[in-house]
Image (tube, rainbow, N blue to C red; front, top):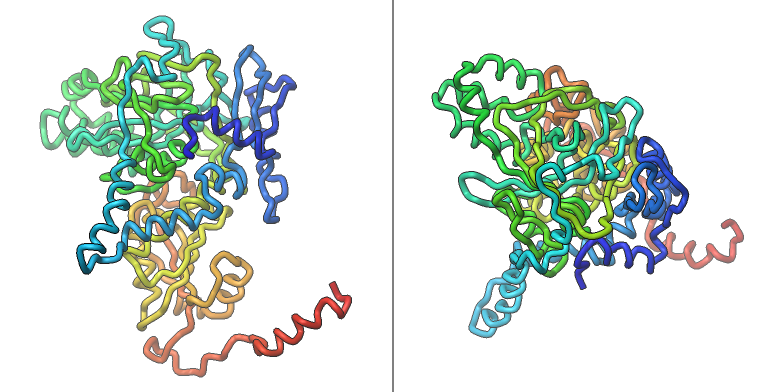
Length: 529
């Protein structure tokens, strides 16, 4: 049964022995982050990696507040969050939807009706405000004070306190579809924050569409395309726009809502690299096998999760930028200061005695590593829909999602590995992947030691490594330019004569199965281990 809200999820964590209540007073400035970081790294390198979820009940400077951290910080909890025994179960459900058995007669068609009805039941539904727990307390105008929330500062050189686990809700001005993304938010004062949506993100595209509409001339619209977030080009392009155009633009607003403390399926859905045409609320409904309940916001024309702990409502003024950062990021390095849009709050609604949800990112492995592993497993079928030769994918935690992808393929022709590399670089958020290693299908990509052995042995570096240029993640501090740089693909597959390799390719060492079976039967009697 789906978790209705964060509180049901916390109860389940406690019943399963996966939650630790912290009654000692802890400061949200650095101390909470240090505790959560240590907890996340407990058992590192073992199947039981990842310490418990943490509920801080005595927050310095915020009497009565509670903060939940590390809720997704282990494989077991990630599976619990999505209510499965294995993350591959969800991949199996996706495959069934993508490749249904074609009906050959009336009975087969009738058998498909329950599946179609099930899919239809995942769509979100809007409920009345009186039934929405997130509206138990409503604050408007001067009553809005973001500083009352126990927002964390996570690393010493951070530019301030950051909201780190927000579900940011925007609407496509053309299609009307909603988008839920996760973008950090630096708190500036009682009623404003930064909005760190990088230029390749869906919310940034929503803002670009509004900028195009607000701009009076085509030439100004082109200049304004960079004014969405990130990169030194943002500020310079703003400077190049005529002042009259800036005045017009700054009279326009883009409505935004932010949910904090949602049930685990909604929170997870905010990070998945879904196509823009698919709403994250629908993805959450699919994951939880139950529709998400929404409610109309108070001051913006958006629907928000009805059972969230906090809802922040407001707007981004088109053309307005402000310095954001530094921020200790999931790469293990600081993201330095840059110019980003500003979110202005018009209303805060919340539950009584709300629970604030947060995370800390940094040197892996951390909580987000398990969320990334879930994305990897769940979206493998979608990659295979475009590239069916892919057998498995591994995004190692140390590769911080976008720096390294290991792929195994069923090789069928010369240059097949390079075709797969280019296919991945053309695929949604996978375009940011800095390094791709392609191995044969008999290599276990989840075994990094095996991958290292294959790669080091199977490549002639000059022949098997290729470089290309393209978009890179905004957090890549080593790229030659912001958001643009080089990528590397390594073909670690066996080489064929059709690829110009005329020498014999040696077989890998493998003991006879019969001998292994005989030794298996003897092993316990040998007293070795």
